Image 1: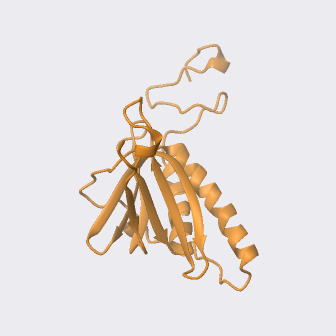
Image 2 (image 1 turned 90 degrees about the horizontal axis):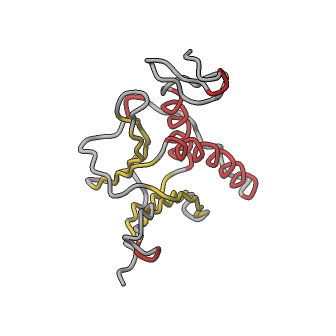
Length: 177
């Protein structure tokens, strides 16, 4: 039986998330690099949104436990937040987790491969651990919310994304908006 492969960048030089493609067909990525090594992963829009919410709660918890830490900045330069080519993802993300090393004041973003079908056992799924500053993580979270909001508008009736060509809303008995 093969073992999980761990890829770790400690610390990252930069970490970001981004989406490529037209609204409704975008593919979301998380990308980090350290020196000349780049790690790119595919993820879902909902994972980016959940991560952003989780990051704020996580950083609040860290600040409660370590009250002497300065606040993490949320600033980012949009030009620096886009993924860099070539975009060659290692895998599709199934699970995300956060950890904290107080001695180094670094946050670990752990990303586990999605188990697709029965091809790989749980013990064989790859893991990427990206160590970043609290400010890098907060910038990623804020940028992630920004790019997620740039997608298709949501239907005010049913909450589902509306296509530019129209939307058949279940709450409107199938009538097109």
